[in-house]
Every structure is written in C-alpha cells, then in structure tokens.
Length: 216
Image (cartoon, rainbow, N blue to C red; front, side):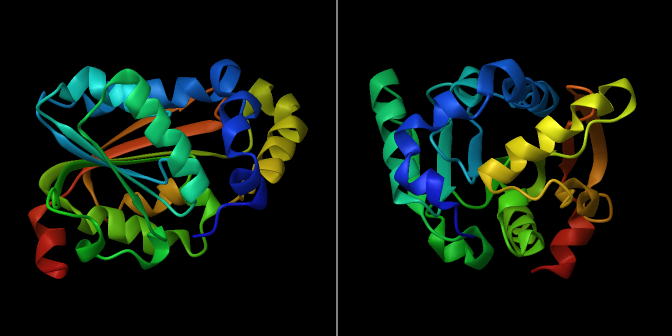
C-alpha cells in the first residue's frame, strides 16, 4: 500500500485538509461505539496515518491496553508519534510497513490482537483485500475487526456525490472499492452503521473459530 504523494509531502497538514471534524470524525465515533472495547485491549490500527483514531481508542483501552499503528508513510507516522508524545500515550507502537504485504512477524509481541481497526485506509490500498485478510489474520479468535470507509452518498444525500467523489480523488481513495463488502463471509455477528448520508460505511464483526481453522 502506497499512500498518495500528498500524504507524504503534506503529512503535517493532513488533519486540517482531511475534512475530519465536519465529515469523517462521525465514522470513527460510530466504529468506537460498535467496538466497545474493554480496558486492557490490544488494538491494531491499520493505516493509522497521523493517529486520528488514537484518542478514541485510548478512551476504551486505558493505560493497560495498547495500540499498534501501521502505516506505509514514515511522514504520517512521524505525525502520529508527535500526537502520542504530546498526549503522553506510552502504550503506542508505530510500525512502518506496507499493509498489503504485512505478515505476523511485522507486528511485534502484541499479535494476535484483541481488535483491529482500519478507517478510510483500505480504499487507498491495492489490493485492499490482501490488507483486509492480513488484518483479520492478526486478530485472535473472538476478537473484533472494524472497517470504516466511503461510498457515494445515497437517497437525498446523493446531491453531495460530486463533492464526495472529489474528496476521495484528492485523497487518493477509490470511492467504488467498498472494502466492507468482503467482511460478510469472513466474520460473524456483523454490525452495520451508515452515517453522513450513507457516504461513510461502518462494519464491525467477530473473528470466528471457523476462520481460524482455515487460516492456521
């Protein structure tokens, strides 16, 4: 997975130009609510970028849990490290690696994780299915996996489709990727949430023993 050039050269501006507060924060918050992680959970944040998920995850996992953030861009990870340092989060580990080529050996001693999360990242990746499979494989049986990503707005909100397509194109995302659709046959107890006129899709499911048997 290679992040678009703007994420490399302008990582320090990403939080400002990403429409986080007016639009995309809502998807993260919906995912946190569905995840509802207990304190002490060890979480994989795939495509963590500048660490915009960290505060929400920290609210749940506390000081006894941990976050392992993975991203292909060292510049984005530099911003994530600054965010963690400013907040005093000593339970954050950052790993620079390509999620589409990731193995368990890349992820450190916390793997397999209690939960894995990817927000607005899979639609950046080619092939995203490889990264999704790796994320699920890195999660223990009974653990939870969350994906937040984008599609065209629906219903009355469809009027905003040109703006949504532009935002995705500028960010390097494929608005037609729909990576959450691949989760249905892979996970059980799938929960669904749609926000911002259906533009943001949230899915959270549980890793089943059957899947673990197919992927020893």
